[in-house]
Length: 135
Image (cartoon, rainbow, N blue to C red; front, side, top):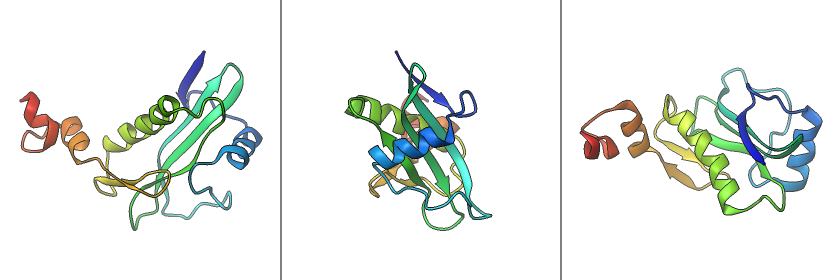
């Protein structure tokens, strides 16, 4: 059974992440283990099949530009739309709870994802987005 967990709940082995990224990366991959001082990690998840790490992703913001998804990978045969979307959605939801870098995030392949309706819904702001529909 596949499990999608925050890395704070189950920390993957560094080498498992490195191997997964080298074989199945779908986004830019971190060039080094040294992060800039102003980089903030908003979400980091692993997708597990038993003891095997089969998916991984991070949502970061460096304090300038747009927040973005990096180190995003899902290994075959799990690289389906369902698994990729599930991994992406949990990271976007985590970020939308505190969107310090704005309501737009760069997705795994660099496309812009507008989170304004999701942010409004989560914040309960009635004059914006989906929250208006539930007021």
